[in-house]
Length: 156
Image 1 (cartoon, rainbow, N blue to C red):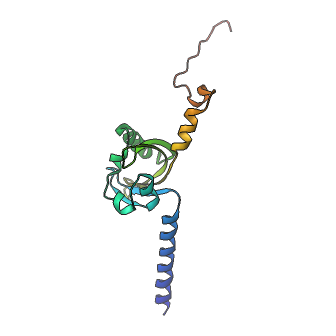
Image 2: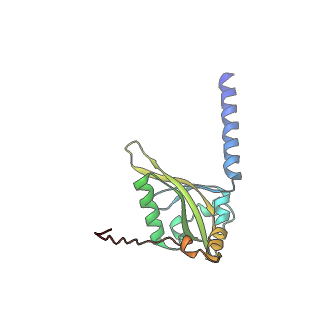
């Protein structure tokens, strides 16, 4: 009897978590280093213009990057730091249109501390990026400098 109750609670809990993940307004995913999607929810599929996770899971995530070098940089950053937080990346929807997504992901390690998966969430930030570009004035604040020079005068 106790095993039956435990199995019933376990099944109920698993269903609750599955429903919870499915209803999140964020894309939730697990991918391999090679770009194969192991798991994703329907919200992620919708972000990229697919009908359901079943359609997206057959697609390689690498094909959805607008710039292939972004994929490489993202994976390298996760491996080096163990995670990335709110990393803006330019993707492409199923219909070919561009979409900006904010990606938060972490490396999942095996028993030998080797990265086997990248687990994370992503959200569509296309509107936010468009508003940032369209904002009048303060453009120098929106586009931070990448170079910095200091001139030192020995006389102060």
